[in-house]
Image 1: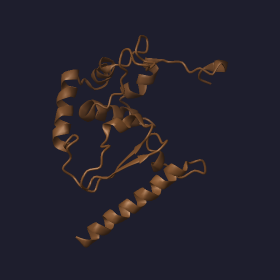
Image 2: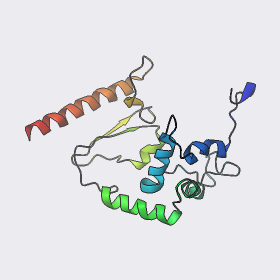
Image 3: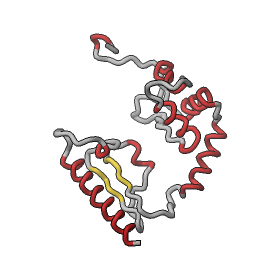
Length: 172
């Protein structure tokens, strides 16, 4: 077992990076695919600010923008300037935080670190649902008896919203 009897898990950057650098189609291509999309479109890099309480602000486990750009360069030959240009292009194409769209429900977990990249304030035809106590995508998984009341309420609210959107589309 990883970590042996100590209960600790080893931190090995190169081992963790191996699935991203592996160009063969394996059992789970998602780490490489997600990293490519991150490097080529969105730059959703989870970084730690020096001086913060984040545990990854110093070597050997420094997690900063340069470390992620290094991954993009090593895995795909995409450098920092290219990442920045592609993010600017994605923001232009998709509207960044000034979306000109409808029929999008922005669902976020209260403790999801990704929520800060989402629309958090409702706008005309762009509703927001914040799920108390939930992390990333809890409501998208099959229901379990251990799911919180809030996650179950979110699933129900999402179902009602989707049904209303589909009903409105039928009327058009």
